[in-house]
Image (cartoon, rainbow, N blue to C red; front, top):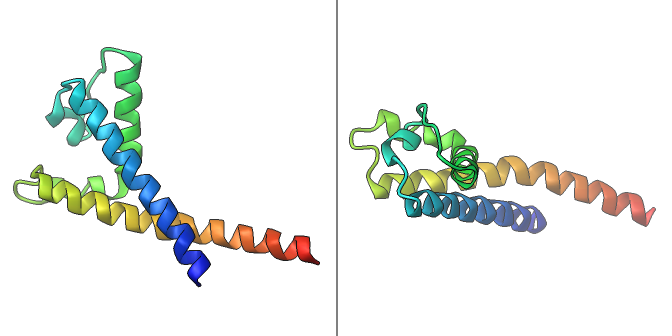
Amino acid sequence: MTKFLKIAGVVAVADLQCFWISYAILKAQDANMWAFKSLGWWRPTSTPSHLAQWAFMVFSFPSSLLPAHIYDGYHPVIWIFCSTLNSVVLGICLGFPIYEITKRFRHGAAA
């Protein structure tokens, strides 16, 4: 079980880092923050801006729907909570299949 927790932790930390890196890139580009936070229609002006917006939407998908239903949902504390919750959920959901695949290959190679 500790191997599963390590894999889930690595996936969760990687998701959290990718989320905040894409957020920082979009913030540094001085993008229209309200448009991409609500996942509305927004046309990026360059390819890096488009890739950063796509990465932000992918890495924040399950929990990006929560701030829209919370009053003052664009508060930084709410985004920190939602990104952490998202990382835990994705760490467990993606960590379990990775754990099972590595366990199967490890036992298959030993036999």
